[in-house]
Length: 150
Image (tube, rainbow, N blue to C red):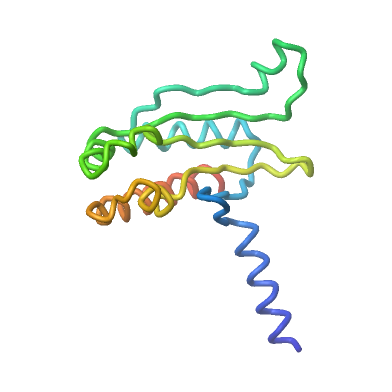
């Protein structure tokens, strides 16, 4: 029974830290939306990524008298990575540059979500670019971890 409980607890903790759903990887953050977005922006710039835009959806909603919990979107990329993917299939350009959505859920938990590179590989038939996809997976996971954990 104890072993069953430990396995169950391990699964629950793993799922609360990161999970993929419909092509998204969601990572729970230990910080507020703003702080998570700030940390993500900082690590992206430190790693040589270009941050094209940071959109505060909550502020936009407020301008039209709609209340929206804290929600920010960062759009970022690097042509050294994106261009080779587009050589495999240019339709991947609809999903590039990369995006990360940071939001607070109804329970006050903060999440960082990004497109699962494996999902993009399937969606755009990037089978000839799996080495690049693996590098993107590793980089996005690293960026998410740096932004969401102590």
